[in-house]
Amino acid sequence: MKGLGVAIIGSGSAVPTQILTNQDLSRLVETSDEWIESRTGMKKRHLSTGESLSQLAARAAIEALTMASLVPMEIDLLVLATSTPDDLFGSACQVQQLIGATRAVAFDLTAACSGFVFALVTVSQFIRQGVYKNVLVIGADVLSRWVDWGDRTTCVLFADGAGAVVCQASSTEDRLLGFEMCSDGSQNGSLNLAYQGISKNLLDNLTVTTGTYQTISMKGKEVYRFAIEKVPEVIEKALYRANLNTADIDWLILHQANQRIIDAIAERLEIPREKVISNIAKYGNTSAASIPLALDEAVRQGKISPRDTIAVSGFGAGLTWGAAIFQWF
Image (cartoon, rainbow, N blue to C red; front, side, top):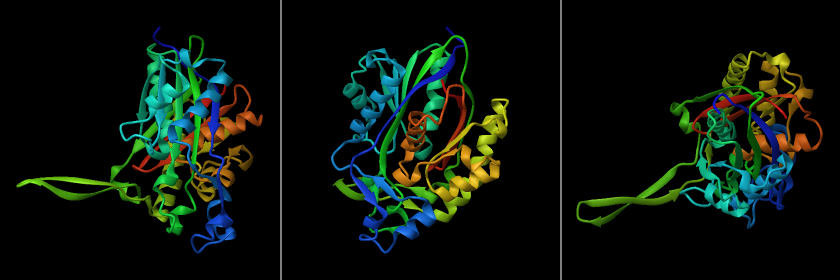
């Protein structure tokens, strides 16, 4: 069974019903609708009020399975890309149980806003080696849990959501055409959600550290410079591996971090605005969910057609960044 190709045969997404608008944010911090939209492109975002990360991910997964005409019992592997699990030990197994995918191996993958791309590339290796046939890749985050709602630089950006795709082994063709992944831990301080511990004496000469995580910290200018420099480069490398160039791209879907970043990257790649998919105005930055959420919306709106060539790129905390080129089924 070795030498199989990868086909992406279904997508799904889910967001909480609760909405926070720019006008709402102006009641929390010193800001305005005009200020937020002009700097980020965002107008509103969805925030979880009671729905767990696992429940959001499960809803997106079921939608993707329905489009793919598969039932949960047919899934062999489930990978959940998230930085905000319900359980620090991981939430993929909870999603497996919620959807009834009892035959599936399930595990979490953490690469922040690059998580969906990294997960897609990871599962492709299992598929190509003939280990698993039907695989669910889910990107989901509930970032509202870790936002300082008094910090104007971050609270206007982050939101909650989930997106999923079904990947399937193909004996006839490989529609995952190329990819590239990168990391740079030296820039970790530009964007992180750090642990903060307090020393506690258990016994004489025996001390442990206990605590929790801080809120999201970001140096916006550094992240912007990083993204517009590294993302075009990683997309071009992925295109090179696929023996394609930017003119072959039908659709560009970037991590929905900031509309200014999206515009600057598209401009550097000389990709026309009409080929760039953005839904940041409605959903904000949903981290690992942003790419599959935008993909699913575009598919269901009829923008993306069979055989369209799609370039996706995620970038964020770590710092991590990556790109994948694939054809829609």
